[in-house]
Amino acid sequence: MKTNAFRDAAREQTSILAPLERAALRGLARRMPAWVNSDHLSALGLLGMIGAGVCYAASKYNPLLLHLVNVFIFLNWFGDSLDGTLARYRDRQRPRYGFYVDHIIDTFGALFLLFGLALSGYMSERVAAGLLIVYFMVAINSYLAAYALGVFKISQWKMGPTEMRLLLMIGNVFLIYHPRAYHRRYLLYDVGGVIAIIGMALILIVLSIQHTHALYKLERLPKR
Image 1 (cartoon, rainbow, N blue to C red):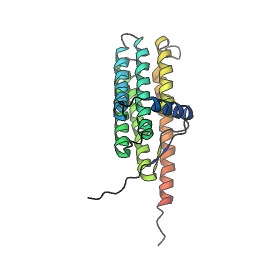
Image 2: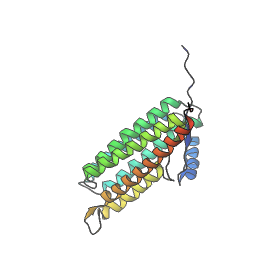
Image 3: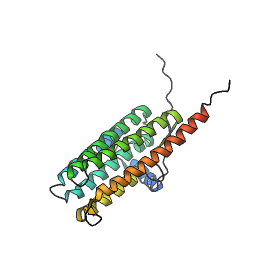
Image 4: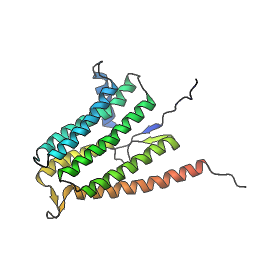
């Protein structure tokens, strides 16, 4: 049975660290042992997020475990960022499989991470839930745009997953010594979480308007 050829969406990555990251990932792909494949790296990325979530939850009893959270976040970056690069370098690409697996892992990863953060006591449950919801909404918008417009934007407004991981890692170190902000009235990560929610909500609104306008122009109905 014949199947229609799949056309992968164009990837658009314009974040601050993108040029450095691309160079680093290409170098890592060239040096990767032959027995390591993209599936191994994808699994490592998921395990990194699970480990980060578990260590966040455990850091309620020992704040020094936040250093271990950073180790797992780095492992997540290594696996999640390198799996696609390795597939392209070895010409072993599976566009549909790769797209689905990569982003379903991101979905579960965000759930594990924020659930662990809520259990840690460093972020309230309501802020963690709000952050997870708005993250999912931004992600859904990106997936819909990839299908409808043929462009998958990995970063928004010069911020991408790598920059977010780096900010989180810096915040974790700061969190060990200063878990509260504004004269200890608020949890530091509640303040950061609310700022992130507002920022992502604004991005979502702007992109929704832009995408709707672009699609309206592409499929303008003729006048009768």
